Image 1: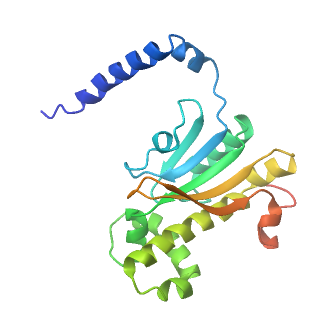
Image 2 (image 1 turned 180 degrees about the vertical axis):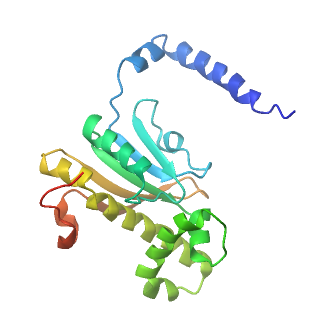
Length: 214
């Protein structure tokens, strides 16, 4: 029987000992309150752990991850996380972070059929279609893939701004910024794409909601 999973439990014990050695009240303080300033929407890729690459501690970042860091308006999981983070936890920053070398992006660029996941990859294909003129001009496939990673993040930032959750927060005067980043797995550096939504003014007028319907 494969027992490699037991290593994770041993690692947990060592991690607990380390935290208590640094701060005997670490877990007591952590259990009392959750007040993260950030919501991270990232890729499920095991090479992109949100807390580690941003140097944040437990309790500092609320995290949602899915394949290719997508914001799909029919995804109740994503919407529930977003609602709780914005409306209850009152986060100040929502960060969409993609990464170079993303298998989901690569699969979305191709025509291979994978099964159930094809329904998810279709959203990536939609991003490609929207930007196909620019992308098809990039002859180097790796460069094209990297650009799609960036464009996908930019589209997801826009998709967040389109939600009634985000727009209601803005209407209520809540300070809320939506950012787009890309993580490079080859050197560990996060690239700020400098795309930020802070109000409905950053969206096309057709997406402005006069009255949100939940």
